[in-house]
Structures are given as C-alpha cells and as structure tokens.
Image 1: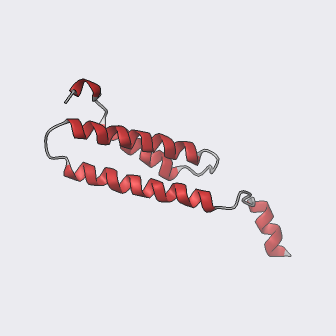
Image 2: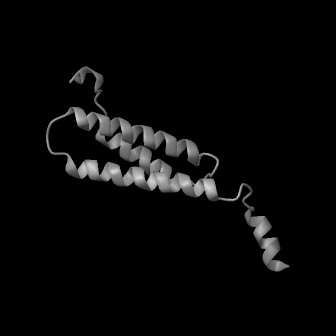
Length: 95
C-alpha cells in the first residue's frame, strides 16, 4: 500500500468540522458546513485505513458522525423552501 497518499490529518479537525455543522444555525450555510464536515470525515477514515493500530473507537465515532450528517442533509431536503421569519410567526399567532 502506498502510504504516501495518506496525509496526516489532525484527529481533532474532523471533530471541529462536525461540531461546526451541528451548531450552524444559518440554514443557508448549513449545506456547506455539512459538506465540509463530510469531506473531513472521509479524509480521516481514509487516513485510518492507511495506519496500523487499534482505532476502533474513533472509527465508530466517524461512522456515527457520517450517519448523523446524512440524516441532517436529508432533513434539509424535506424542509419547506420558505421558512417564515419570527415576525411572520408572530402575525400568525396574533390573528
């Protein structure tokens, strides 16, 4: 196996990208955050496949994170395209 292809990635970097996606409140920025996090998770998964040693816990965490990001992306596809602002909701409740 050519280990030259596997670049060293800080194990914390995928967690930071994942956390940024999970905490993003701007729905317009969320798809990009999800894509960034997914890319980091895939890179880390590939890196772990090039290394020896027991990284089962991190591999499980990566799998879990990818599943959650996939579910989040799927939920975005099902959301209405126009989300009412807080002001619009106030006018609905006062009517």
